[in-house]
Amino acid sequence: MGSAGVRGWLAAIARRFGGRALAEAEADARRDRARLRDAIDAIPEGVVFLDQDRRYVLWNQRYAEIYHRSADLFRPGARLEDTLRIGVERGDYPEAVGREAEWLAERLDKLSHPTGERHEQRLSDGRWLMIEERPTTDGGVIGLRVDITEMKAQAEALAQALGRAETASRAKSEFMADMSHALRTPLNGVLGLGQALEATGLDDNQRGLLSEILASASLLDRMVNGLLDFNEAERPAPPAPDPAPRREGGPSAVRVLVADDNPTNRKVIELILGASDLEVVSVENGAEAVDAWRSDRFDVILMDLRMPVMGGIEAIRTIRSEESARALPRLPILVLSANTSPQDRDASAQAGADGHLGKPIRAEELIGAIADVLVT
Image (tube, rainbow, N blue to C red; front, side, top):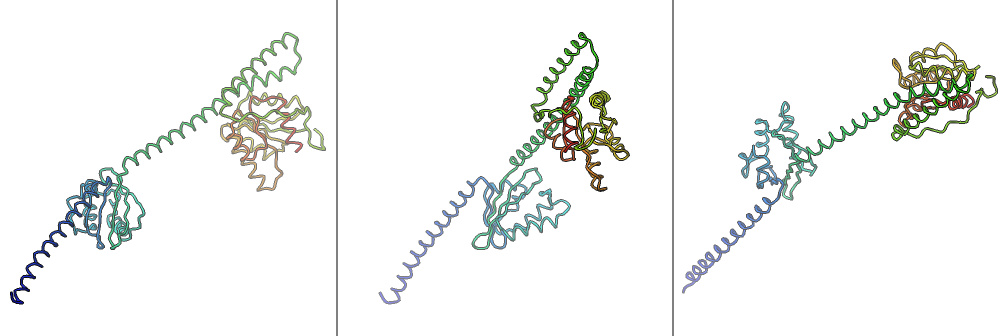
């Protein structure tokens, strides 16, 4: 065989074995692509691969299911930008309605700068997606889509449940405050008037009857406290009584302004303080208390909390504010209220009260509290 024949024979062998190698390489590539396809289709979330021009390279079945309204637009080489624009025109993205150009620009900006930062996307069928996009080594993008509709619904249900719980808690607190006021106010009248009556001239029979009344009222008071005080702070022990409250270094002639909308409560306080030779001026609400304080001189104010026109908290704040603005001396203010929860006590203190006494009012406790603030 001549040299030309040898060369022809070698070329034929090379073609035969080269073609076989090429075919085997192509078969291997097809197997690898099939394996990759199987792998990404097995992923439960939507996955999409885009090239550096943001054109579709590969996506899994879940991605097509998530964007089923746009799945007819998916094909290798198609631009995601075109898919988004058509989707906006179809109304697939509710958040784009009315601001289509702005929404598309914002979305494309995120796509151009894939940082891995997650953001949410709402679809027209009510579903919510979590989107995460990261760059690939060749300048492309790999995107992940997670359906978070159920998670959003659970979060909303939890928020509503928390809202209902907070509403129920507020309603409970308001109910307890109302019950405290409604039960302790008449008890205050019974015990206060009974104590005042006890100081008058009674025969043995009358004193025995009054003792039974006061014992029953005290029992009822303990029962009410047992019912209500689980939601309130323990009432402080009454201070040691001082039968003749005095300013340090000065005589007795103390003037007390009493603000309470309940006439029985006012009568009880008047009797208790009158027995100790204190001068009492009574008003029916916080607004009248502020007016009386502005126009007259008092040594101490006893302020109820729940009153019409102006409540005790607002009245105390008004007085403290005007004292500061006009550089007036601070006048002692004691709260007398059936509401004795920690929140009520904190509100009184923050408004500027010098003490918070709970109803039913006890004579020795009230006299002692007045004595404390006057000698301080």
